[in-house]
Image: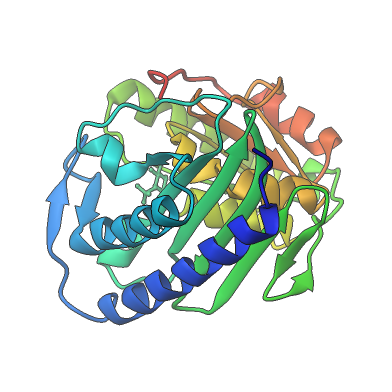
Length: 273
Ligand code: IPD
């Protein structure tokens, strides 16, 4: 049947606000931590609780919809991406930040239909930043329209990069090499610890580009639409078409800047989602 996008957005928004209350409260308390793919790839009971709120609520409202959730996949569920309406959820992006009570963390919820992004909600409940986007309708921060910076020049760019949660030597070498290459050529570099918020900050003109190898579909699924609707660019790290499952992202204020960054990057290909 036909899908009421506004109803999807409203339902998800209600749940994200409830989940946000949980995160805002839990970040002040002692965290119950487990590790996943590495000793620094963390999950807390809050990640699991938020994912449960979102999936229970959404599957109740939309019984035919599919889900890809970070913690469900970690718990052994398959990451299946089809043309069906699929909610892609990162319950807490920036879990390491959350664990350390560093208030740069968010809930990320994206709805993709026919492998295209339709709805995006990214919420940092600690700093009260609500990023939203619907396909074709612009991107917003707390209800105000946002746009990417329009920067085209590398030398005056602020670039976000992340160290990530893999301690594989080849991956770490890629990270360090890319910092070394870019740092002397740009205004500044930042590693704030949230893929999703990095992308949303590029969308709001709070930075000019961001790249990372090793992210997952749930890190980019919502922010992808926020960036696009803000007039920014999301591509593969080599500059080609972005592939949600390929675990690489390059996001920039302009196509020109994306191409300049892509050309300089040492590439790395993690195993696909
Ligand atoms: C992580 C964060 C981090 C990035 C990692 C991601 P998570 O997401 O976005 O900034 O460097 O690659 O996995 O695990 O906190 O949802």
